[in-house]
Image (cartoon, rainbow, N blue to C red; front, side, top):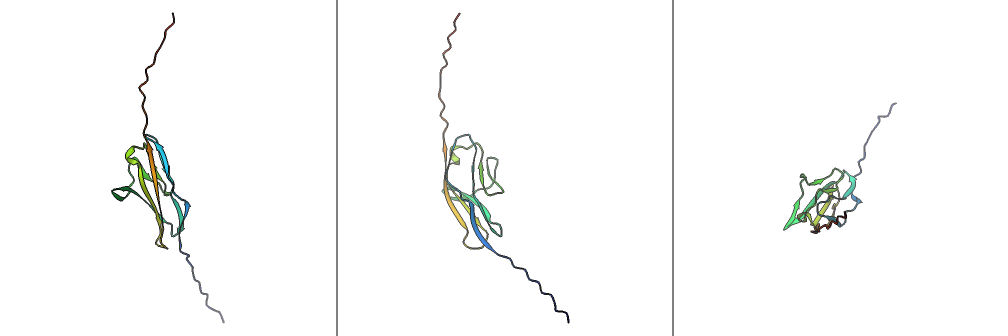
Length: 122
C-alpha cells in the first residue's frame, strides 16, 4: 500500500542585525558624503532615515539627498543646513528593529582673498 507524501515548508523569520552600523561623519561644505546604514534579516529589513529638524522628520529622496537601495544616505553638495542629528532605523516587523543616532558635521569652506603680486623682469 502506498503512503501519502506530505510536504511542509518552513520559513525562518530573522530580526534585523547590522551589516554596517551608521556612525558620525564630517564633510566639507560643497562635497558629497555617504553614510552607510545596512542591515540584514528575513524578511529583508526596511531602512528609514530621519533628520532632526525641531522633531525627527523622515527623509524623502531629493536631488541632493538620496536614500540608496542598500540603505545608505547620500548627500550631494553638502550645505550647513544638511548638518545635525540623524536617525537610521532598520525594521522588518520581527523583533524590535534597530535604530542608531548619528551626527553629520558640515565644515564651512574658508575663502581667502589673496592678492597675487607679479614681478616682471625685463
